[in-house]
Image 1 (spheres, rainbow, N blue to C red):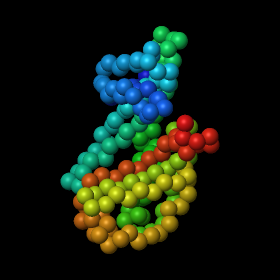
Image 2: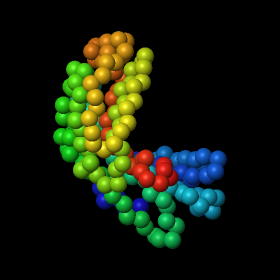
Image 3: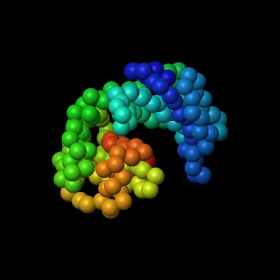
Length: 173
């Protein structure tokens, strides 16, 4: 594997009719069991700590999955280095959501082969997920009282905002 940028960890697995098999998470060494299954995949992850304060920390994660090509001696791949672009595109997003305002977002210029936007908020008492197209307007809405109070108190376990390549035409394959 020849990545275009630093890789923090890898995962390998085989896709089978019974689901994923031989899942291996590692940092320096990866294995693909090519004689057992045909659909072997390698997934690489890049993590960047963007800062922290008393309320928590802001982390960026990029990943890239590719099918293992057993006919070549090395595979080249790119992992996105777009944390600053993503941060800029999402500035004001959480503030608008927290103030029950509609918010316009546009992640269409962040990365390649992206197809959808997602955000998730997690706490001990709830999980809230929203998905949509790469650009659009998240309308003003009112969360249930318990969820709004949890957000106001600043006790979210974590929040995730990003884009991915799923939901492209042709299905999830």
